[in-house]
Amino acid sequence: MMLYRFLMVARRMDFKVGQKSTYSRTFTEEDVKLFGELSGDKGIHHMKPDRLGRIMVQGLLTATIPTKMGGDMNYIARDMLVHFVKPVYVGDKVKCDAELVKVEEDTGFLRLKITMNCFNDTGVEVLTGETNGVIKKAMI
Image (cartoon, rainbow, N blue to C red; front, side, top):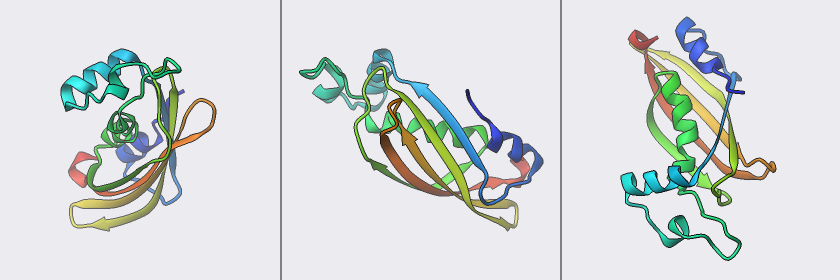
């Protein structure tokens, strides 16, 4: 189930350190093909099954899970550090847990730091990272 706590919080301008949000999705072969067209990332491991019949999802496609969560809250990333821990394959359901670890008021902005951890459907961590950015108070 998708939780939109960050989005609801953004509408109330009530951000607090420790708030969490979760979002998950399952990647399809069509997702991988479309992302390959859009990004140009058409490595053979993204286009043809491996010896076990799996097609690997592009790392940056996996990273769209936390970026979708940021988009829900009108977050503008200033930087993003992502570690691709393990590969994700077509058919994997990936869940991302995000947490606000810093919230600061600034003139016209809220400055945020968010950490993220993504896991496949067997509980294996596949992506970790953090991001610093802002939300314009006018967007809240």
